[in-house]
Image (cartoon, rainbow, N blue to C red):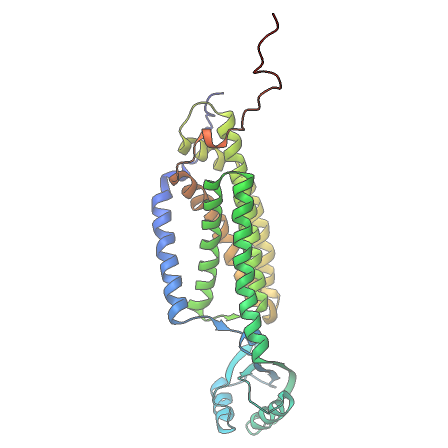
Length: 313
């Protein structure tokens, strides 16, 4: 079968070098931010007391911080939660002091400036639980990447496996870098979103890899770069439709889902976009750079039983 001549074939691989350079710069920037700024760990990981209060009118966060400092909570993290009237306060654990007691002290301090402050909720997470969640969360991502590497290597070929894992690592690092640069709170919902991004990106990469393998077996003439371009073009419509419908749902969650899942929606929204990009320009480019060829993807020949025996006289 000759090389498929699609009129609208997109030369994706023409931009693979600029794309790899851009990705390298973004990864380095993300790693620098993660080492300098680190992540803004949520209460799930750090432990401590989380208090949500409501004001009758827009709250002045600077005044709230001043009132808490005067009450002995100088380390309190204060931020709006959903609206300008809702305030979220995070306080580090205090030995020998119950969360209910801390809540009463905080509420009393805030009511010195505004008598109409209402307590909405109060939660407490111990530091041991936070450490365990951090360790288990990192282990979950590592195990997921290792399992994916083994699966893709068995399902396709080791060059595609390295390309897939490179794309997934690329997506995870950039997503974590986004949260580090913007200092968005990283909690369990965001961790779940990062794991979901791994699954989404892998699904997209598997579809592309399967089409590349199919075309390598069907097309007798053509360079690997040409075959990869044809394969990416053939899957382009599916990629656009899948990504667009997913993004529309995530935009609804981002703008209307409320503050509790804002971080989840942010991580998934960014991850879907960057995952679509990486399945084209990272996974495929890495496989091409490693020298994937038709011979690597052809099914092994199976000798017929008795074929090596001498013919009957």
